[in-house]
Image (cartoon, rainbow, N blue to C red; front, side, top):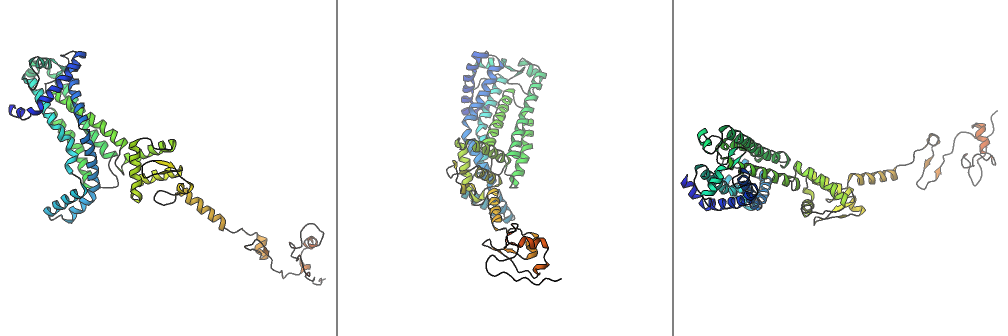
Length: 428
């Protein structure tokens, strides 16, 4: 143990110094020997480390999304060279080099905080064994050994014997209850973090082995935390629980505000963005402009959710620009999407207008029987009737006489100008 501690001495000294500085601040408020002072010092150490790791976390997100995009190509390489492992590895490395991705980038935050985790473990183990380490001297060591979190000493473990726990001024029951609760919370937070990543922030249009691996990790990691957690001191459990909660909250923020394209989270985000933009008439946040800019740049390669977003803006009379802004569009721009296709309302209106223009007037039954048809100029041509004039009903003959005032001569079948048709002799 001393050999391992000496290997991490380059990091145990800074970690112990940071804890002591936070302890001075919280000790002035809660008391130097209280569990609150030492517990909050560990929590503050976690927060400080995770803030410093935010750039690596952003790089991890970009790397994970790049790996998700490459999954179809990787699957093709695996199927093409399934019998040649060396050639398969060469093609994979070539693909990574061409796209500028690194599979290890997704593990950077975990790898980066591992030295701090081991350093904290050795600091707390030194407190448990009564050995000074780093900048923690004898008075600070005695104060830390008195500190309890809900009745459990910082240096106590779930598997410790009752004699060892009693030497730290606690009971075995208190230690095991507190450590068991913290292990369960630690495993649950890890499970929930991985689950929300799989259910909300994964491109549902692509089914790849990468997704199956993530599902396995969703169940493997909590079990690992539960197994190893029984051998961690209470102070380390505080550290690990805090970093899990931080990761969960950080991931929830990323999923809500910068979701993976094609995921359920993106559908929910674009729905909220649509309501915001159509109500305000513009994009306000820089992050929103970045996403709108990326959607416009995709053109015809947009997914279903992005096409719905563009169409919703067009229906509202807005147009997304290449720089990520949204402006009021003209009537023509409102009738078209950004990729040149008509919206359903505009296309329906145009089709309905054309149909109304081209549809002829419906003829009445009498017009169809008499053979009359409408011409393009609007005039009516009447065919000559083979029926004798005097064979018509008397009411019709009376209406056809001049001065009757009921119908005009043209309507009764007589010509307005020129000689009139001779009447046939009446048949008696």
